[in-house]
Image (cartoon, rainbow, N blue to C red; front, top):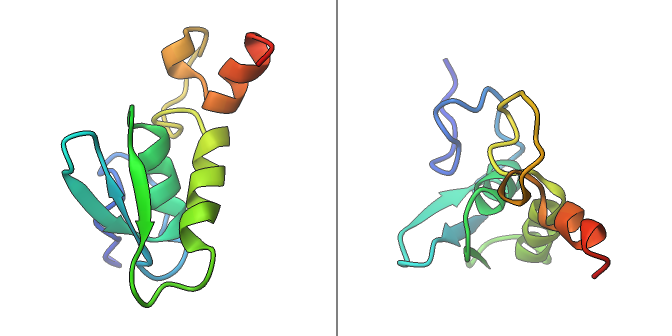
Length: 99
């Protein structure tokens, strides 16, 4: 079995989307390094998370993760109805509230 990046949630079945290029930190500054794909999924699942490019990351890696996370629902690999604000992406919540 291929190893996945530290940002990949154990229940997320998706493979990595490339090399480890960013660090995602939560509000308490606990973090995980990850590929852009899993970092975006992790960032979308955190409240108040931040993303930083690693020193050897390609240009724009952190902003790509930030933008992707904005459109992803928290724990997006879990199926089921999503109606509560906490279950929707930030972009969906902005659209709902006209912001």
